[in-house]
Amino acid sequence: MRLSAIVLRLAAAAALAGVGTLMVWSILPALWGWTPAVVASGSMSPALHRGDVAVTSAPPRGWQPAVGQVVVVPDQVHPGQTRIHRIAGVDENGLLITRGDANGSDDTFRTARTEVRGIGRLLIPGVARAALELGAGHPAPFVGQSVAVLGAFALLRRPARRRHRRTLTSGPW
Image (cartoon, rainbow, N blue to C red):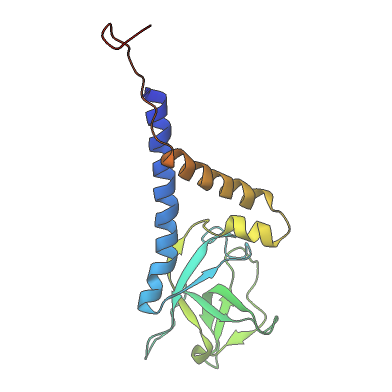
């Protein structure tokens, strides 16, 4: 087998290992009761980007919020949705003031400590970016990613071609 074919197969194996590792890191924390959430906007940039997966856990009993901590809270502007923002402070009533890192001002609502649905634990960068683009009506990144993964699988499943050398005793020329 030629050196270029070996390098190509190794690159395909490394890419698949990377994709598999990111998938495992997105799913494995569920064994501890942690929840993966896709970051759908750029409001937390540069710490979290659109398409990242933020893994959160429910606040433990006796949890005390800390300024700078990333939390998932109900989005009072968009009922039924959540926001993943950073705690910017606590007001005089003990309610949490949250803000996205990229936002110029605090969120317009306050959140009770008991309403916090998750605390940031782990970040898996970029894993869901192609899926978000697909959902937004832009299939090219998702199709490209899918073709690359399937191509890597096909490359690794294909048997290696070996050169056969003919010798004088191997038969007719």
